[in-house]
Image (cartoon, rainbow, N blue to C red; front, side):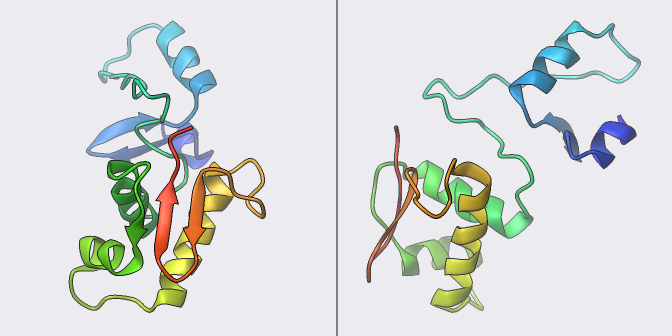
Length: 127
């Protein structure tokens, strides 16, 4: 398990999390080990429950956007929900959004899923 964690294929955060469908299938084929492994099901909408390689702050922003999928999320609402106090600047939030895009978008320079609405906020599209 530690070797898989070093390769960024799994992470431990109270439970072990598998990052890819291929890795999930591989783990399911293995003989049971002394440690129990639970495979979390995919979200019925097709969105993964956990995104690979997100930092703590990226995950909090992504989770907020995912909870409001398809809705315009104003920057101020995102910042308040994630940080509550010591809110970052708009440019710091934008950098976090860019890093999330690099991880979820096929072409981060032409985003299809995480869309910026100029002067307003962001939308995580459902399709």
